[in-house]
Image 1 (cartoon, helix red, strand yellow):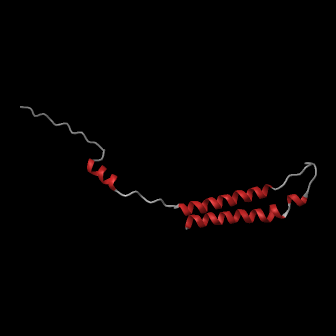
Image 2 (cartoon, one colour):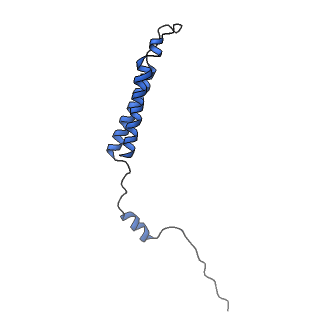
Image 3 (tube, rainbow, N blue to C red):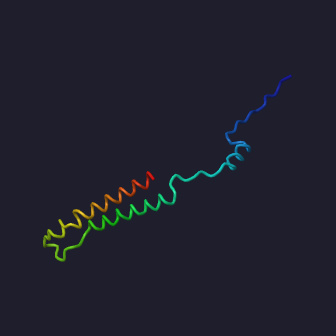
Length: 96
């Protein structure tokens, strides 16, 4: 007599018990909370305002070189300070 071999099928799907245990586990808490996102938004807004300050005004006549607008306080001092403060606020938001 010849014996028939049983065919074995291997699956990689999870068993119903594993599915139930995964479904019953509590939802994971987000890494960043509402307050962190608020501070990130403030930091990004400060960076954008600093970039807009760096754009500055425009010359009415492009053939005239106006040093007071190009090398003025707004573009050389104020704008970089605002941009750096935005970066500091973003670092604070990430490590809070």
